[in-house]
Image (cartoon, rainbow, N blue to C red; front, side, top):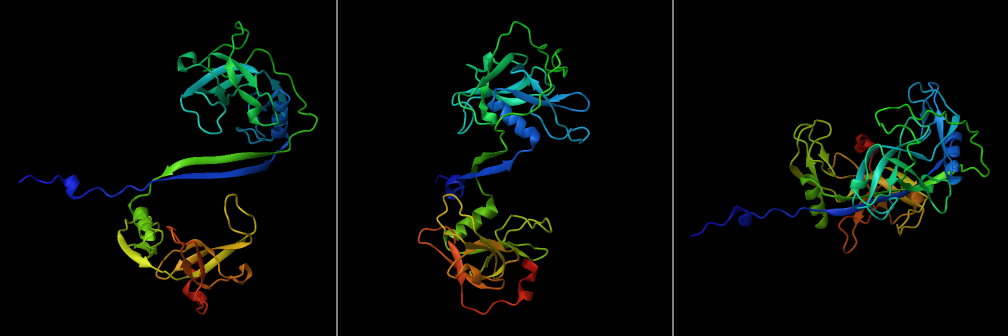
Length: 338
């Protein structure tokens, strides 16, 4: 009789994975220093700021990193410089400066004492070295953003630039000229798209929680010390620091502990505003989870409202929670879960 391999007798559980994308536009106003810097890029001018100690910082900052004093002494630096360090990027990602393989480089521009991070267009890693001379390649269309620098490119200037020694902070022998920072139609604000693509792999506790949701059950794990039931489970009690493994089914009904009214429509979310997002303490849970409240006008949602989950036909988690029709819960029953 042949023995059955252990891997066949007890196959490994499926490892859950899911691609996730976190994306949003980040809108911010600009102070006088950042406004001058970005407007200067639009005009093919690179500005730095001089500290009280005489160092020239590029990109410029509004406060001296050593003394915390406000600094606005703008100077114009060169558009050529020296690579101080680099890393090769063989597989460019969406939204990066170049679509073909390139090098990320830190470039100390002529007249600057610090380095600027950007992309270097090079045919391969063998063509990149610390100490090489490079220059700015301007974008054909510029709007007042760091992307107005399309990238850097190799530049042979006959040795007229600073010494190619990345270990020094001496900059160039020529003092960079002062600049007023004044331009016509200055840039006063920017919208920077933020995006993070990653693959999420849950641990054992989260995997058990997700698998239970597929069966329309909500489970948590009980701490063996404080006896609180954490939903979603984390594999350890965040209060006691003790590993958790005891599975506890909670809900499905629960109580609204607190909530907010959402008035701004999110991109790619097919929900009309205003709507309510709430913290819901499921019966038997020691921690509130969040969910959308439906089936009731937004201005009638209240603390203590008793709710139950509503599942869609193929949903792996509740689509929203609706009122059960029960009397509101007494405040004392959920005050510790706010």
